[in-house]
Every structure is written in structure tokens, then in C-alpha cells.
Image (cartoon, rainbow, N blue to C red; front, side, top):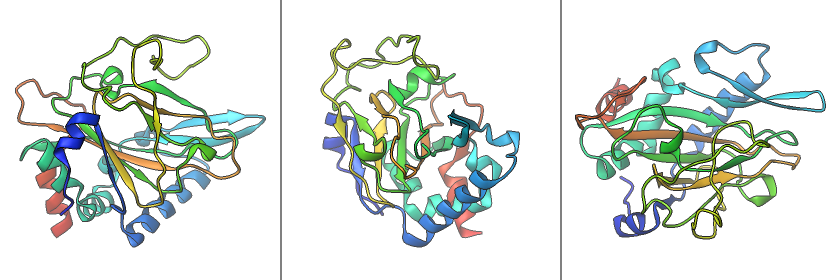
Length: 243
């Protein structure tokens, strides 16, 4: 069972988890996304998004992975220990509310501007946190992944629209009084978890290699205020692993 340094996580708003995704499961995930990336069409149930430049169109994002194929992703997530982590952080009624892939393709992968996840969600997700799995090397050379330590401590920071950025409202570390972002250097299979208010983002990928990641978000399904479009309890995910 993965062990979380709760003091460090509470202080910084994030915690690295080296080698969380095993080699066989890593290969399964990579093969799955390779197949969809090469497909002529993708079912609407994945809510796909694309990056496009200079006539090149590549898959950028996929959503609702667990709900599209629970018998693939449920056992895989269970083997990583994600459900155990969720119970440690959230409690016994930990519930998955998102499971998505961020594929930041070579040359055309656009930036993801600095933001807090909770600011972009339709619902308030009590105690929510994300586990982000690296499927390729992740570094500033291929767009990377960065975040502002301690940025979760003040709760929600007002986000602003930027004319030059089309995806979502965002933050600016200096203008919003956040700490200087740190870069995460991850190997395939490594993961990092963060609080719903942890400000993070990534740069454009101008390299010749894809930068791929996969994220699952858990929240407290026992909270009276809990609402979700999609939900899958950690207990039910664990049961899929035993099937």
C-alpha cells in the first residue's frame, strides 16, 4: 500500500509517488491511447479534444475513461494503489469523479495555463485530489508539468479569461501572489498527487516526442454536499479488481 507523507502533502498541496504505475499496466495504458490516437474516429462518450497546427491534428484529451471501460481501468487503478491512497486522504467513501488522459502531442501540444482544478469543475468536490500518472518522460523539454507549492492553502483564487488562451480561465503566479512554480521531473510510471486547490499547469510541447499523462480524481462521496455527473466509489473499483 502506498504511504503518503501527510505533513508534506498538507504543507505543499502535492506529493510525488515514484513508480506508482507498474510496467505491465503502463504498457496497457500506452497501447490503449496509441490505438485511440491512431483511430479515424473516437466515440463521443470519451469527449475528445484535439490540438491542431500547420495541418497536423492530434488527440489532446480524453475523458470518462473509467466509465467507458470499467473492466480495463478499474483493476488497473486498483493495482496502482490509487484506491488505497484515496481512502487515506479522503476517507472510506472516497469516490472517483474524473478519469482522463492528457496527451500533449509532439510539436502541436498546446499549453495548459496555470489553474486550480476546482475553479474549472461544475460541482464542488469535497476533499478532492488528483493522482496524475506519467506515461512518458515529463520534463520542461516536452511541455512538462509544474505547480506552485502552498497555493492550495488559501482556497479558491479568482481566475481570469485571457484573450490569447482558449481553453479555460487561468491564474498568473506573480500577479496572484503565488509561489514560484516548480517543475516535476517524472519517469514513465511515476505519479504526483495534488489538492483540488493546488495551482498547476504545463507548457506547449514543441519537442518531437509526445508528453502523455493520465489523471484520476477522487472526492468525499459521504459529504452531504457531494454531487457529480460521474461517480465510482473506491470500494466498487476495488471490487472490479477482484472480479
